[in-house]
Amino acid sequence: MADSIVAYRYAKSLFDLANEKNVVDKVNDDMLLFKKICDENRQFAVVMSNPIVRHDKKLGILKNIFENRVNDVTYSIFNVLTKKHRENLIYPIAEEFQKLYNEQKGIQKATITTVSPLTDAQRKEFTALVAKATKKDVILEEKINEDLIGGYVLKLEDRQVDTSIRKKLNDLKLTLA
Image (cartoon, rainbow, N blue to C red; front, side, top):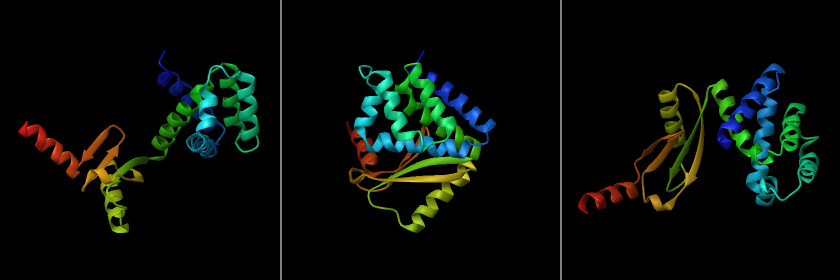
């Protein structure tokens, strides 16, 4: 079975349990914390996904870092996954949990990539544009990519709007070829 399917099933079970115990917001914060630690500490992420590192060592690491920082529901999933030798799934589970949380709360994540930082007016305009299209609250993540030359790339889940000059030049090159 594909890891993404397994991760979704664990995330769904965790989400249902968190809903049942009225700790969804706290568990979501815990999942964000886990993702942040993995993103900021490459070594931690490598250890968690390394099959050579013994599972009791991984549980010890998780215990030292998270036991007193996260909700009991969150810590229990870390325990279960470690006992089942599935520590490598914690990050994908955190991502899937985030999707479920956003869906329940009516939140749409969007990523805007531009050549230079957005002004407040541009930020409001893009947020309003996405909110109008999706009828959800918007969390706008901003990225800078000078290779775009100009324009922007707006991503919503699996949809993308690319108005960059780089894309237009590539399209022109294909047309002329």
